[in-house]
Length: 336
Image (tube, rainbow, N blue to C red):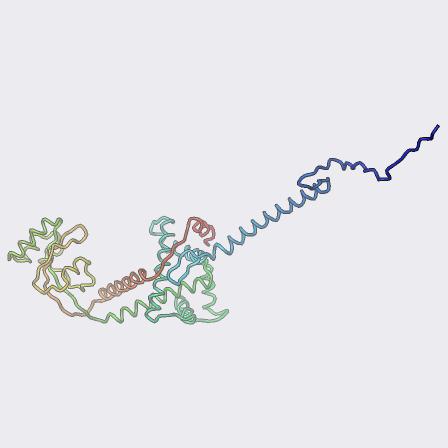
């Protein structure tokens, strides 16, 4: 009987795959317990870094970026949120008796800073610039002491002032610079104005409607005495006692409508009716002359020219207000 011979191929048989606990394959990766634990740890570390980074950025934004952000730009003059905040407390203290709401005071401060920026630019146009030494001297003048270094009376008083106002040195100096430029600009305007100029004397009959004023004008042009008309018909009890005579005045200090109506008119000419607020004026020009300004007139004329210069500059430069609710919230939180 033939012996049966068993044959083999000589090839290794594949070994069955070992099952590693509850390992599963996802995205081509076999997730063993170790890999799963490392994945969770990595995810937790990533989230911790993400949250930490967000908190760090929030801190940086709150303490560096936001306070340095520009809330007002007037030409090349930039005002940061931190400067606005430093100015807020003293401004509120100065105006706390006005019974004005905080919201209105916050808006008023922004308008004040805008005018200060314009004043700096107008001053620059007029050759007015203030040096650091002059700023120090101006601060010392506030205290009535000479400028001095560390340990001096000036140094002590200035440190106390910064502590009281909650302002930084640079911000206080910038505020002082704006004040000093405004002061010098006003002085220059007053000097350029001179001590005398054109002044006009007028008689006025005041009425409460254009129809009534037209009747007065017709009677005056028909030959009735203007002084008598003023004495009997004017609604202004003060001037009617003077036959309608108004105090001598510079045309630049008259209401715009009146100034335009009498421009180029000679003594004896009658013009009107001219509306001034809710009333109507019929005017007779009595006299034009060059005369010395009173102290009050010079102050008023200087202020009028200052206002006109600021108004003109406002139309010449770009002004950008970017103070929003978030900035105001930050300012209110950090005001000293």
